[in-house]
Amino acid sequence: MSLLSERQRMDLHKSMLDYLHASGFAAAFNALKEDTGTEYTPDPKAKYTGLLEKKWTSVIRLQKKVGLFRPYQPPQTSKPMLITLQIMDLENRNAALQEELSLSPARRAASQTDWVPRAPAAHVLTGHRAPITRVAFHPQYSILASASEDATVKIWDWETGEFERTLKGHTKAVMDVDFDHKGNLLVTCSSDLFIKIWDSQNEWKNTKTFPGHEHSVSAVRFMPGDQFIVSASRDRTIRVFDVASTHLVRTISGHSEWVRCIVPSEDGRMIASGSKDQTARIWDPLTGESKMELRGHEHDIEVIVFAPIAAYAAIRELGGYLSVFWISRIRLPNSTKQNTDRSKRHGLYVATGARDKTIKLWDTQSAWHDNWVRALAFHPSGKYLLSAADDKTIRVWELSTGRCMKTVDAHGHFVTTLAWGRQIAGANADKVESKADADAGPSAEPEKLVNVVASGSVDLTIKIWLP
Image 1 (cartoon, rainbow, N blue to C red):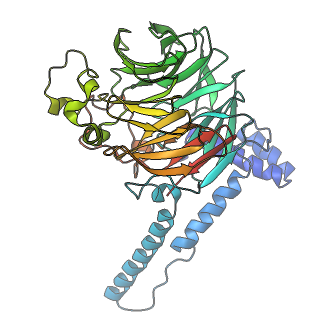
Image 2 (image 1 turned 60 degrees about the vertical axis):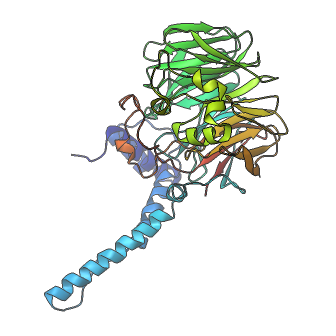
Image 3 (image 1 turned 90 degrees about the vertical axis):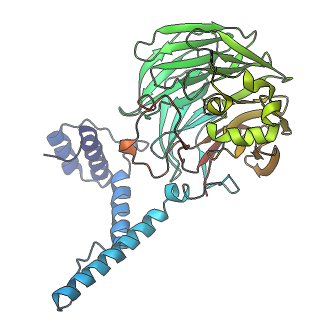
């Protein structure tokens, strides 16, 4: 019985066929194709091109490191000494293996708790033919998806900086992209009015298409549990769709202008949106009821994010818990818990970035870029907030003081998108559970994420920032 899954066998067969074709072994190519029943047309842009050689050289390098090529041959000696020498040899091999692992980007990227991006970027990913609109990390593997105004989505390996494939299906600019919590599905939205689902487990095929919006779809996200997606559009509405059936579940109205951004809270009990009408709103996704309206920006709101629980202490230190006006209002309906209990709830704080060049924490203190603020990401430690703007920079803000502690000259043009990696440091990808299966309540300590940041720009590049 083969140890490989059906998909792994298929990948192996196609990699072998690609190698035989590239090496000119036509007879062997045709024989293997017939024996395995594999349909494969050589394509220099396919992910199988050169894959067998890459895997082989990786194994060779690792085996040389660990010393597996040469079997251990102990000298003729006593049994106790023989056992000691064998143990020492195993320890040496283990040390060599640990050294190999420590050199991997993922391991380096997980080792520094307070790491923030700094120049230069580890990789510069090129290939899009128009500005990048959004980037999204896979929650388990070193995969990055990028969306662009060139109507395509590209898949990359952020550890190596290698391009993997292009997803085509939209006919106009792709405005947003998001993975579900297991990374099995990818959702995209476009100015062509459609939302699409792509199956990462099935050659990234477009398996579902959602019509419904009447104008450009500017943002889309999976709701926690992955059963629903929520989208925002230039038609001034927010819509909730059922993933399995593609049916429209709810249309939420309230903004008077283009809804530019949307994000659900970690527990899925709230949705936050930002609009061209210069307001942000908090919604109940089950009823579509507007829970609050946030006014204060003087231009279009480009980005909105919920603060993670790890950031609460720093935010309170910045604003003073009793002086934060909005805290008592951004809460779950009918909440009568004490403040100490409520402080562990998701969604107590939101951050917004706008074209008025400010970032607002509702409501503590404002901070400034020299141009439109396009993207925000909270640091996993909860100590910092990262922002990207049309001044071509990424800035790191210390939440406890509101001070800009670092400015990175990130791109040669406007920085349009920013994302922190979703991989859990040291986690076994096969054992990572979906958040749909997790308890409703937050864990005692935030999960430690791999330190990797991706940014995208109007300069047509994506940059990977690593320790």
